[in-house]
Amino acid sequence: MLDSVRTRLTLWSATVLALSLIAFAVLVYYAAANIFNARQDELLRSTAETVASAYVQELEEENSVAQANEVVLAEMVFPNRYVEVSDPAGHVVAWSGNLAGHQFTIPAATLTAARQRGTFVVLNDLRVAVVPLSPGKELGFAIVAEPLSVVEEGLRRLRRDFLLGVPLILILASLGGYFLARKSLSPIALMNQQTHRISAENLAARLDVTNPRDEVGHLALTINALLTRVDGAFQEQRRFIADASHELRTPLAVLRGETEVALQQERVITEYKQSLALIKDEAERLSRIVEDLFLLARQPVDAPSITRETVRLDQLVADCARAASVLAVQKGLRLGLNGNPPALTVMGDDEMLKRMLLNLLDNAVKYTPAGGEVNIDLGSENGHARIVVTDTGIGIPAVDQPRIFDRFYRVDKARSRALGGAGLGLSIARWIVEGHGGTLSVESAPGQGSAFRVELPLNRS
Image (cartoon, rainbow, N blue to C red; front, side, top):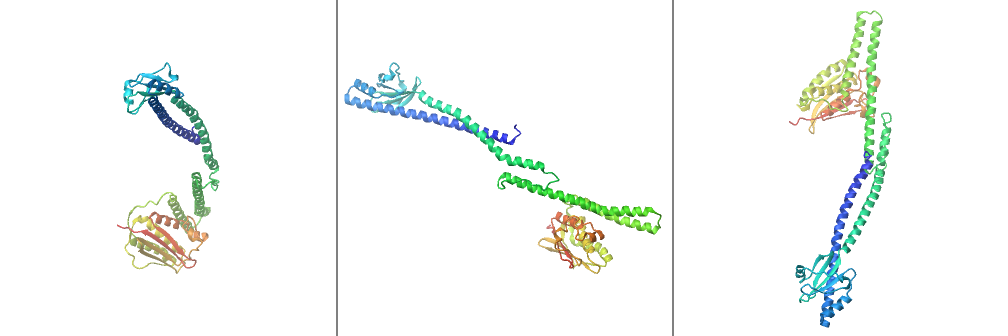
């Protein structure tokens, strides 16, 4: 039962409310007790002063103590209160009718304290107020008493109300809290049911968002965003597997077909050499695809394994230009390095940067017809090294430019496969550039060539 969130919330809220109510009840009880006692003392003092004033007035008019005692005590009758009049020594000289046979004597210390403004004392479960009959004369004292049970009865009723009211309020609040917790958590229960129905086969499903402005709505929106990313990752994975299978199927089919043909009958050495050369080319292509796939398999979760060391970009660009010039000459292209490259350094991995630049150069050579040009330009701008690879090739349509860095994406699939491409070179190049904290972009137009722009942060030291 305690596994339920709403039960735990109800118990926690009930516990907090119970402690709060108990603390409130205790504070109110002691505050009420102080008020009741103060009120009783105030009334007793007021009554005693009234008795003293009437007594003195009657004494002055009649000039007789006995007459004053008789008149005052006969006229001044108070329910639940007892009145005495004592002489200066504390001896009782008169008392009210309800006190007959139960007179009490005030201690001498109390009388001494009462000579100025009066005082209070507890005697025989009575709260007693003692005031002088006349502060300037030694006439005696007016004494008024009231049972302590008068205050205790009020406090007893207050305790009874608290003992009945606090549990009742706690029960009602707990029921209301449980209802509110259940009502508040019902969207989460619904989300739980909907989430259980979502699997890898229906990741396009989304949770219902009842109120996008509250915390539960924010949670639902976050889960929906997560499902969108997971769905995209699944789709990307499926596309990756399908594209990889498709790319691997072609060279494997060529290898198997060429091998079967070569083994069907006896052939001359020249034909065997041709078959082996074809098998070698397809095997090399298959190796490149597998190597690229292995590298890209880490792309969604890992940054490239970069060795942070100082790299001279001018030397790297020159080395890559010499390596790519061999391919350019074979195809009848002119590959040049513009101007005298400045000495620029970056922190990174020399081998990975070479691979990135060679991929761009290889891509430019493949898609530039014979007689065209491929140029490399190296410079710096705003604290970044800038490498621009331009060609006079077939160009890239604007609709395809946002996707050319996706894995296995090719503008012309049939022509790309005929040229030996697998659609991985640009994806790997961008991954390497971004792993070095840089950017890779393209500007191109069909029939006007392309310009791939690489920007890498310069080594400040």
